[in-house]
Image (cartoon, rainbow, N blue to C red; front, side, top):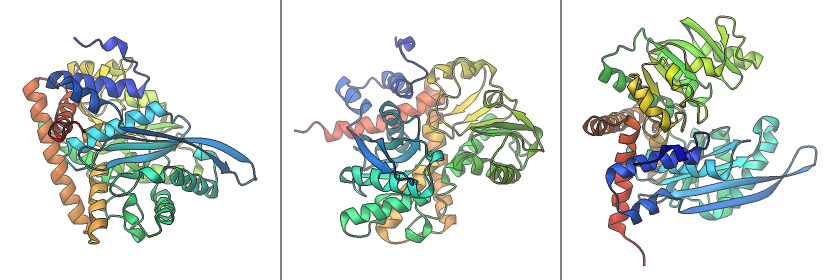
Length: 421
């Protein structure tokens, strides 16, 4: 019997390992395979100087972890954040492996990050940071090796700087080194909203499974970044009342609903979200506990845990962020009738359309946005059905079922490839 007490909820790597161990135990994997695919294949730590605008020099540390490349090149974002450390990047890289496998696209998992506060940097400093970090990790990334993408505090502009820096390193233009690029240099239509669109697709499937009507229902979204904002926007346009929204500053609540565009316009104009005049101010912890049909945590990991799971009132949780719910809280949420669509399934729309972008770059043939969204919907609906079938057959949470599906696919790849030499 697995001793869950030895895993620390506050540590993303512990949560990744617990999720793996729970599912791997159900699959009865060969020990050598389980040990091989649980841990990262390659880790690179780099330190480099950043020249600030005032002429001072700051030493920064960055990471790139390639967790698994059995099913294809590594795939995973790059984040700039003060809390980035090696264990967090290891966990995030592992989650990318399982995310790609659960939707059955031919990528492995990777992740990168730099420990820094981009909020205190000018645009020029952020560009120098990006270019120097990419120069340091250039030997281990590439279209056939490891393909970065946007993540926390990075965006299409950062991806454009990466393309340029890597192309200088290689001596020729190489658009396919990253995904999530601007359209002008090979980005894909539909990529900007892809993670949010995928979240909405699986939310619709979950509501259908539970017999709930989303139109006229209510939703709470934690996080007003790319994923959270566009998810709120899409749901609002589909007739769902957005009753709660938040960012790192705090949140706002209006049981009658809010237009997320108006909330974002207020934030963009004033720089402060919680004083939006058409709603009441609310803390992020309280926001998660609001009564609603759907809760979309789309901020950072570790938001829902044993301490607050008993107060969650949502009927469905769709994890827009990576690792927002502790697996230690899953059984409690399940007992209380909360249906959780786990991160490796719920937010896989982003990496799925990143795969589409990569394919388009390699073929030099681009698709319409309708084509992209149609293909995305097919993949997300199919994956949801496969995970749900396992959850029902095994009487397991959707998270364990998703990991069983993903780990099984990666394990089979290792089994048939074998050990070399």
